[in-house]
Structure formats: C-alpha cells, structure tokens
Length: 244
Image 1 (cartoon, rainbow, N blue to C red):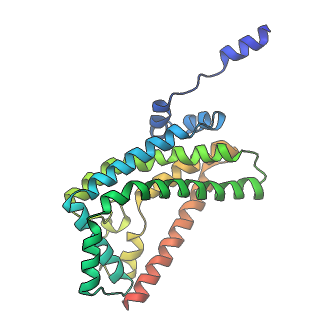
Image 2 (image 1 turned 180 degrees about the vertical axis):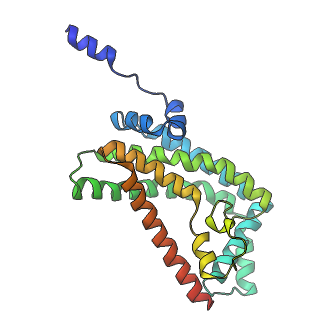
C-alpha cells in the first residue's frame, strides 16, 4: 500500500488544456510525452477548430476576404490553363456572398477528416510496418495537438491576408525569389512550399517520435520530402497546363 501511494504521489501531474496548447509551441517534446501518456484529444480539437474557424469566418465576412477568394479561384483556374468566361465569373461572385456561412462547416469537416487521415497513415506505417505498439487514440491525440501550430499561425496569417488583400501565402518560398517569373516552373514550385506547413511537419514529427520512441529527424525529413514531391508534381502540372 505504501509503495502504491508513493508511486502515485511521484507520478507527474496531468497538464491542463491551456498548458498543453502552449506546450506544443514552446515545449513540444515534453508536451507530446504528456499527450502520449494521457491521450486526451477533444479539448485540443475544439480549440484548434474554434480558432481556425473563427479566423476564416471573420475574414470571409468582409469584402476583402470575398474578393480575395474570388481572385484565388480565378488565378487557380488560369494556372491550370482554364480561363473562366463572364457567366462563370458571375456565378462565383454570387456564391461568394455565402462563403462565411459555409466556412465553419467546411473547417470542421476538413479538420476532422484530415486528422483521421493523417493518423491512419501514421498508424499504418509505424504500427503495421514498423511494429509500433501505440494505440490509434494516442496517435490521433498527437496529430490533433499538432494542429495547434496551424491554429496559432492562422492568427498571424489572417490579418496579414486582410492587409495584403490576397490569399496568396506570405510564407511560401517564392517570396524569397521575387525576381522569378510567376508563370515559371521554379516560381510555382517554390510557391507550393510553405514554411508554415514545414513547421507543422516538424511538430508532428516530434510527437510521433516521442510516441513511437524514434528519432525526429528521419520522420521530419520523410514528411518534408513527400511534401516537396507533391509540390513538384503540382508545379509541373500547372506549368504544362498553362503552356509555359
């Protein structure tokens, strides 16, 4: 009885939700160890959803936000060699007035399905292929908590997007090479690589490394390499479709 009492007293106290959210940003390794030991995910999921959804909804409620989305849709269509006619542009304009109403639901679906998809991939690789023993709930809690990085950065990127009146990222690699032609393959490749997502990949790699007792470096390198290949494919498709 005495040994049990001493063990319980010496066990680390569970971190509160605010402590875990802050810890993902400032002390990720220790925080992910806590998440792995106590895989509570709902509070973190709700916090990430409320921040990202509120940021996007407020932005979409403004004329600047609506026009930015319209410009992005037109630019994306042209990047793939598809030029919209006036009727299509008018349809996009009409639909844009409802963006603010669609955004919370779309954010919930994308966050929920995205977290499950990424967890499923991690679970398949580390458990099925590499013999890991973590539960799906543990992996899911790690992935959900890593979303704090994206939620925190949305508080920075959304006001910046409003000030710049565009949804084009201010943190992609293309901003460091302003002399490149926007329609060139190099500009499109660099524009598809965003430093925000690289930070998120490093964060989730730390979490998975802690959970499965593996080094962070190889996990992060693999994720970033896959991200780079996806960017390469997208840039190649856009360049080919535009005839550049």
